[in-house]
Image (cartoon, rainbow, N blue to C red):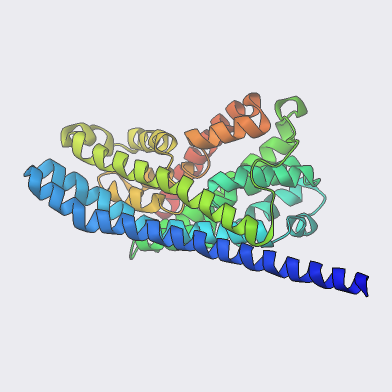
Length: 342
């Protein structure tokens, strides 16, 4: 009798804890929605008022660009972080390991293509790749997934189609160039990579909790972290569009040889989340399509925050080599695909 009563008490306790975790996750989702509402309200109401009070056309123009980027990008950022948190909390990582071939040369394109159906932001891709390596996945395949997941997932492609309405070639170009970069980098690592360059991760670089607790923690962290980079990126894009004189831009926009590496470097510096970078690229309408494609391909694969995350997870030697080669391959893929499609 006492054993049954103790078992019943444990069942009730587990149920109460589950309800508490569920309520906590709902509260965190509500906080994310409240943050979204606050950003939209400030951008749509207070921004124009501030611009009118200052009576300066440059300030009004700056706020117009900033508002457009933030208001269009935040919904996709929230959607992407919700999907990413759900994948991390409820989908076992062993699912991917079972689907990959044992041969690294064959596993690389499969892992790269898996990014189409397994959404995730670039901030989450680094710890996921480290976890896959700990589970026995070949480093080349894990690195291909690291590059492809934040670049070609459905949320990113839909956001790109809305940022470039009536231009499906830009969406197809982003998919083709990003997937090609991920697969080529995986094959390059399988052929030329050395074990001493890659420090094997010994533990997970983030929350290890699963279920509702992991979902709530992942959603809160990803949305607040990536949202901050979105705001900074939007401010930088607006400042770039207003401060830099048109005569200076004409020196770069007239030649693809100059504009492509310029926007590729800008993508590294701005650190815009992949769910929202299409709207930043669309605001750079003075540059040729191939240059903006390079911005979209490079950004989710190589930026300052990703280099820092890779250095902390896999070691500085790996991060410097891998990021520099990835940047070059991404630029080359963008040029070839842009010449072909755009």
